[in-house]
Image (cartoon, rainbow, N blue to C red):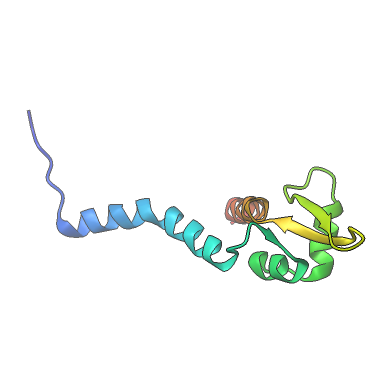
Length: 98
C-alpha cells in the first residue's frame, strides 16, 4: 500500500478551494443581515439599480421572492436568501459564458 503525502502548500491550496464558497456566502450574508430587505438594501446586495430589481421581480420564473409591507402594503421587501440564490445563478451563467 502506497501513501501519497501532500506538501503544506498543497494542503493550504486545497483548503482555500474548499473554503472559498463558504467565505463567499458568509460575506454576502454579512452584507444583508436582515431576513427581509427593502428595495435600497436589495439593490445594494445584488449590485443592480432599482429598475433592474423591479424588472427582475416581475419576470416570470424569477428566483427573487418578495412581499408587500407598510401601511397600505405597497412597499416591496425582498427575501435575503432568494437574493443570494439569484446572485449565484447570475455568477454561474457568467462563468459558463466565459
